Amino acid sequence: MSVAHDFEARIVWTGNRGEGTAHYRAYERTWEVRTPGKPPVACSNDPRLGGDPGLHNPEDMLIAALSACHMLWYLHLASDAGITVLAYDDSPLGHGESAASGAGRFTGATLRPGITVAPGTDLGRADAIHHEIGKVCFIARSVAFPVAHKARYVIGG
Image (tube, rainbow, N blue to C red; front, side, top):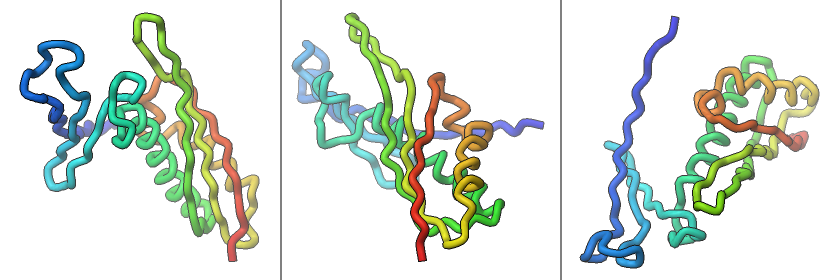
């Protein structure tokens, strides 16, 4: 049986310089994510499209959400499998393309987690977990592009 979920966010454009969108250069591509009870997240457009390179853009947020969902499921499934994870970090890479019209899309993503595990861990078993996550991760099950995994493992002490 499926259970329905709703997720809320509020997106507020903050880039009105006083004349709105009167012309293309009249406004900034800045906005905030304002989710009730959480700190706001300042965002912008991709710098190639006039955005602020110092702020998160939608593409950053999508690849980060994909990576975070994968990490949380990895930790859960590793725990269930008796694998002790001591540290986890990821440097995900989103692969995209843009058409001459400016329309763009993700064509894939590569997750590149660095995972420190306890001594005695079966690394083959630890690596196999990545292939199960695509069946359960909310974000991975929702994207329309392939997601590859290139994990690195370190035995911790």
